[in-house]
Image 1 (cartoon, one colour):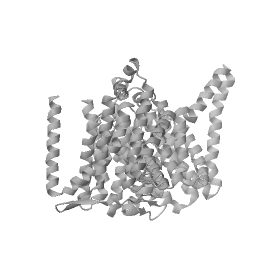
Image 2: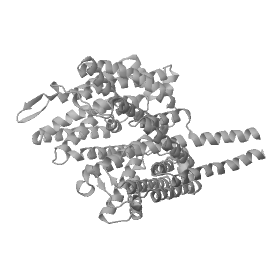
Image 3: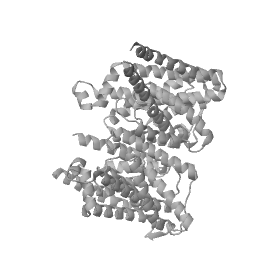
Length: 307
Length: 316
């Protein structure tokens, strides 16, 4: 416990030092880093929820976000809605799509080896991305909005303001999910299932229903994020794949079942990435740094857990 | 009972004869069939190599990574060192194997989802490196091979891939009969028991990972020799992970013949599907993965041997 406190203290100290350093030398790194971190945290939170309670690595995670973004795109095109308003119907549709995906595929492999679950969700990911490819073609789509490009200037630094919606969204997601898990009846039951499914079953919790509801809630959160995603980025069928890996890396970094730590993990990755991008000629290498970080983090975690 | 035994003995020969006919047939048909044959054989090699590793319980999503690495090694060695086609394929196998050996020394300590995701990330890492290393690899535009194997003639290249595939089938069968097989199966079934009965888990996993990566690299080199160009997007395409995986699953995991059957069935089926749904025929592969996992985890090979066994019992 004492060791933990020391680690946490040094971690926070180092982070604060770095923050001051960046603020002094290159504030845009920090600004863009926080904005990136918001995107990563918002998409990683639902995966953390599913992994922590249902104990399934959903390799179709990013693809579900992509499907949600397409849904939101078509809803806002047909009804002339703002994508941010389309988040509500998209979230509801994704809730039921989550139930459908869970009930038809994943729930049948809950007791199967982990290998089967991984391959199965890999298949689900492929079906989702290829179905979208068939129906909407691989042509990139984008909604252009005026308010996205608003900017602000502090001193001699100017930056986009709209992107701060992602960190805000991540924090809202976190607060709602934490409230749900700690305060509501269903959420408490879900936490119990996450800790020990057999014990939860013995005390009379309907484990299968809990799994379904949690997966559906995670899907709804993904759906809402998808609507926010479309406001800023262009979408194509393969856009989701990278986010599956990024989310998984963040969850592995934060520790399975720990939602608040996701924010810290995303901050580290977001700032590190935007730092590499700020180096001239570094933009192409940013994903490289990201993937090396994934490998280092996963490896160091697995070593520590063995000791 | 004697009838059942006889049936059991004759059936493999029937399958073998059928297989030989399928493999020989492209020699007497047009270049289109031969090109399908080459593609099927490439995927067959990848599917078998994936299966060789999964026999130890380690799920790798890194096929495309080592495949692309092999493709690039072949082209780069041909351009810079003026290697011939066969030397370049061997070079690709050596490089892919060596990198897998170095990486595996660390990565193979991971299990389950951590191993799977890390192999996926490794493939991306290779791709990004090659994408950004403009001076050496040509960057996003890729590179051209100066001279194709056999000048791209259809029949000799098909023969080349056929010999390669037969070699891999033989290697896989050797794996199944050797000491390595028992060690890997023991690791898959229960790692702790395997460890306590004196198996050096790490050594055997490293052997399997290195050999399968070398095979995947060689397959990539063979593919580069057939098509004569490499780009980061095409050589590291996720299809090279997805399609072999679907083939091995459909045919049946943990055997040599499963991936072989799966490759022939899905490869030919996929070619027909392309005619009907040109963009997105891969959705069928995804559906096959899901259906096989849910309803037929043993695959075609498992189904066949099961019905054979049942029949044998009913005769007894």
